Length: 198
Image (cartoon, rainbow, N blue to C red; front, side, top):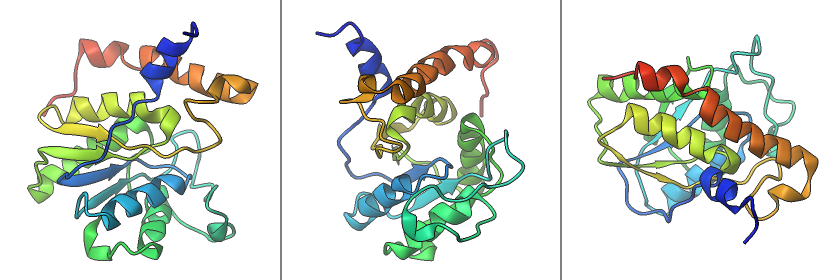
């Protein structure tokens, strides 16, 4: 057993998919998460996908898709627009896509998603969260905070070459994963003291 196995297990959360009321897709420029959500939809695990995301709070606009290559050069106003287009292009009908275009960071993805589902009268008992694999723990914590009565299954997609099996093999992926470990601590200080409750 490697000394870092506990970190691997903490960050790389993954569940077997099963029937759910909704699929959550937090924002981002990595189309693999939309591809995974589309596949889960096509396999019948849920009949609605909620896509959230404007663009990173650190940027003044959506920098554009990073993957898949077919979308390079196309202009999208928001992460939500890009990810929704990937879903549409992979067989998900527009009637199955719920869009949230205001969130600019992960916690806000969860907050704005909860606002939208409340407004629509959607109260999922079970939901699937499709996020980047190395982002799974932090995404799960935020969505669990905002959906305390929902069982959330994490079905991530590998992006940026960062997966549980090989993350320790490259300095870039080491920094990426350990950065997530740090953020799981630093970003929850005030949340735990003053939780955002509905």
